[in-house]
Length: 139
Image 1 (cartoon, rainbow, N blue to C red):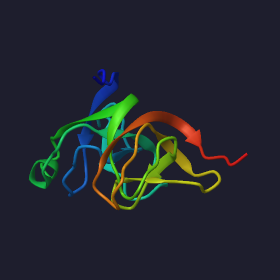
Image 2: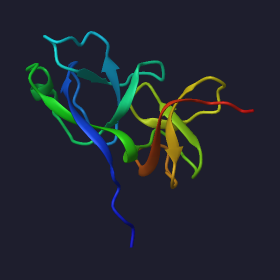
Image 3: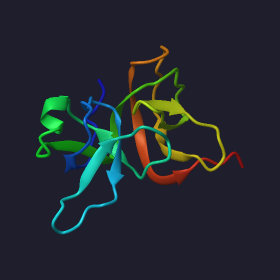
Image 4: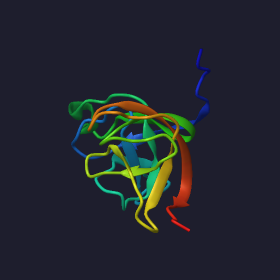
């Protein structure tokens, strides 16, 4: 029987106009200050300030109020939404839709390491050991 997935999660102010889904990649909005709480946005490429993985569904109407807080897994093991086939042990990054895909591009931002497989082209949920700040290296 699989054990629990422990990790560090935090609430962030959800920004943008799109709905958030469980398992999507979340980036940090850099304009946060004392007057503006920590803000996040669903990832739309592999180039944003990687933050973590969305842990709850949030519809677009709630996001557009500017008051919705979303839980984001920052470290540990997260359930992630696949954007393609993923093999165990692969380094994953974010695609343009906030889903996780395999990366083999040198110096790509790596969000984590796949712990199990995603067997379809898109939509599978798979476990990822989050590795904040890691970059892909083929050395």
